[in-house]
Length: 170
Ligand code: ZN
Image 1: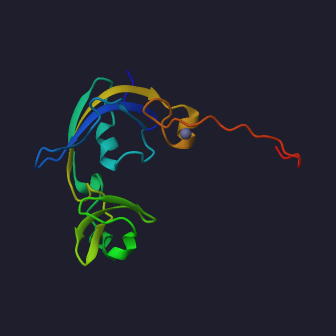
Image 2: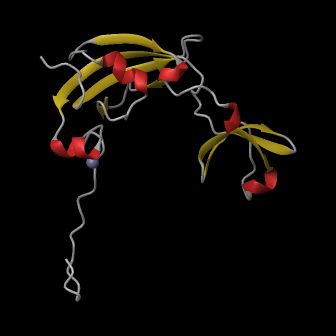
Image 3: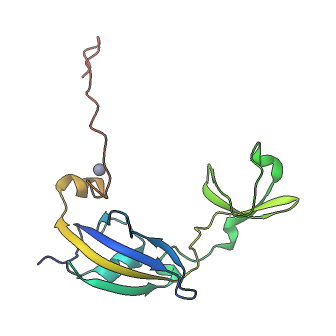
């Protein structure tokens, strides 16, 4: 029976909880299993490491330090910006908005607005309960792309047909 190693495509059901409060922050329950290619940095680092060697049907529980999950909370990623910067949007605490520098959360609204570019789970240790549903060898194009294809993975649009133009360029 195959086990989880690099360049396997693995499908898992998982539930992630915060070990301190027991709060569930993410779960695949009621959805399709999560499918990913192992060894291509598609997952947070500790998640793959803890699953290495597991087999189909295995149930694994582990707790990751922040460093092995979404990284430490970086104080430099918290910034003050003037309200005018938000244009038509009136910023409220808890909002997640998109910017050129990536997503950020509004954490305080006063004369200025405090925004936090850290991942919401940065600085937190995380517990995962994982059930291994399926393990298969990756196809060559999956390894070349660095991600899994098909259900639960990346589903590409079919390649657009190239049309010859008058320059004879195909
Ligand atoms: Zn691809």
